[in-house]
Length: 113
Image (cartoon, rainbow, N blue to C red):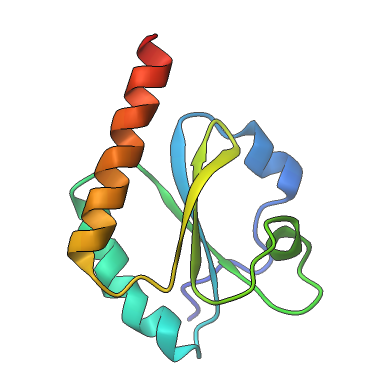
């Protein structure tokens, strides 16, 4: 069973999302994707309110092209359906933690302003 949705959400669906969300582009057979999955799961475990949506990517997949995905995995950080950051091929949970903590903090400051 694939961990990636195929097909994934449409671009219109993504733009309609509210709150924070992480959109992952990759494929099951990609060794970089396999390496990043436990790193991201560990990091996102400390941010339980942020959903992760895994989308199978590849040639001709419109969502990946809309986000200009070049390497797998690519994690697009979204706030209210708009990209506010991205991680490409993360390998260190500490680095991901720092990026996610900064991202969540900046979202809180923006929404609370």
